[in-house]
Length: 102
Image 1 (tube, rainbow, N blue to C red):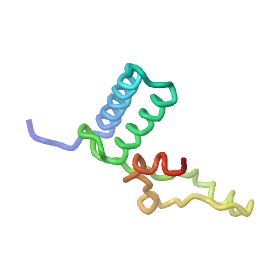
Image 2: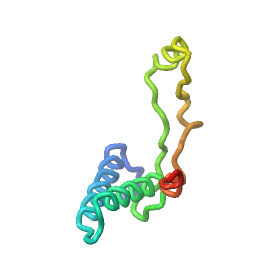
Image 3: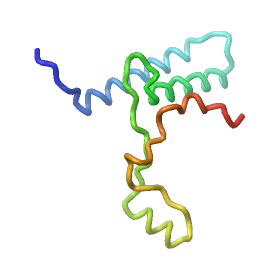
């Protein structure tokens, strides 16, 4: 077999398999409150997106506004999200700042 790039469908399924595994893991943790389990799951999910998981690479997380959103917000004197996704990737250390505001 010749090595090849994963397809988008394969990557999506690998990611979803990992999320399902995280759900099972945090559901089976004893001696923790529901809030602690939800926080643990959120931290694990953000760590996965950030690339801190052994099983998967990091992922890009960027806004994807509707093509008419910018003008709508301008017309309503509101700020709007950027349309260039490569410049607005927020992933990288989300799991490190999850609880920063608390």
